[in-house]
Image 1 (spheres, helix red, strand yellow):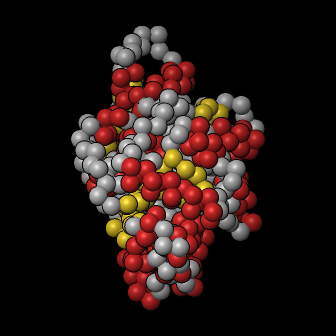
Image 2 (spheres, rainbow, N blue to C red; image 1 turned 120 degrees about the horizontal axis):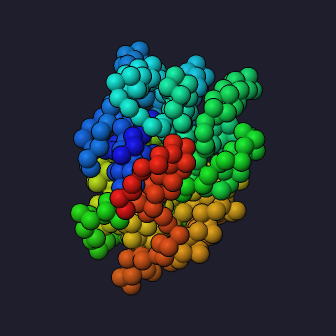
Image 3 (cartoon, helix red, strand yellow; image 1 turned 60 degrees about the vertical axis):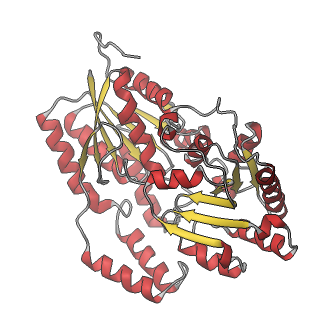
Amino acid sequence: MKRLLQIAHVFPPAPSPGALRPGYLSRYLPNFGWDVVTVTASAGTTPFPARVISTAAPSNGLEERLRARVAARSASPDAPLRRFLRAAKENVLFPDTTAPWIPGALRAGMELLEREHFDAILSTAHPPSVHVIGWLLARKSGLPWIADYRDPWAGNAYLKRPLLRQLAEEFLERGMIHRANAVTTISEPIAAQLRRFHRRRDVYVIPNAFDPADWAQIPSVAPSRFDLTFTGSMYDGKRSPALLFAALESLRREGHPAGMEARVHFYGPNSDNVGTCAAEYNVSLIVRQHGVVPRQSAMRAQRSSAGLLIFLNMDPLTAGEMGSKYLEYLGAQRPILAFGPQSSVMRSFIERNDAGWFASDVEEAKRALVAAHENYTRGTWRQLADTAEAPTAHSMAFRFAELLDRAAPSADLERAV
């Protein structure tokens, strides 16, 4: 059995979509001859057997006090104090806001490499700090290193940096990734961007996946109301429910049951803009924020809803964004209502697989809500979309194992499939 040292900032049981990919690799790579040890900032008991080294960043009492004071004085995420605190943290910490985690994670990785035998290193980002750790560990050990991107770093439409900061990050990224034995990412648009930026051809697309086993203990419950549910992060207002709320407000003014009966639920972090946006469109009474909950609680909410929501950044530069949330929603077997730019690859995926509806303007959003409500009233809320295009966690691990085997070949490797 070969051994992989995996660097991932989030890992199960953290209720974050970013935890799924490294979690699936840890769970299923052993089926293909690779034992995995993961260094992460997450803590808690994993829902499957896994060896995890948790190295949380040092507590910053000053930041916590500042955050509490700003939150108490500024309800809106766009308030000047909140914007100042976010900007200060994003611009002071390099290469990203999780930089304080680097020393502890690096120390843990070095200790593992000194005590035990490993055959390869894999770092899966975001945040970019994980690639810094993977790069340093690979330089020290000489082991093959695969740099995995769930999102781009340079050229990321969500990261608006001052020019000098952007140039510094690009210099660091190019210098580090030049050392990587291979680069992987989740979609062809991101792969094309990485190939251009790094001037290398060995950038491989290994899409995100869903695991049918995750749903084995989650019962499917008929929705008792026209509940629409979002589970995930709003990324400090970089994603907005404005299009959905505008459509609901219009339907409610018309007295349409799709607007009158709708109830919208948000589960997850960074959703301060939701309340402000709901008030702007006069839908506060039908919007409820549940905050961060355990992943299984969010999954139960999905499986008792009439529809599941995806909010994408409306910037056309993000049209290649897919993420991983849609895969979990397919497992929940509920129709998807997604909102994003007209040219989004998510639109074509949803339409091609009959997975729900996609909207880029208010009229499209209204039609989607009306169609979803008709499904609910007919009792056809259970959505059995074609998942042939959606890779499983098992198949994703197989693709990574193939790449790892090429990076760290062994004549006597035997796979257990």
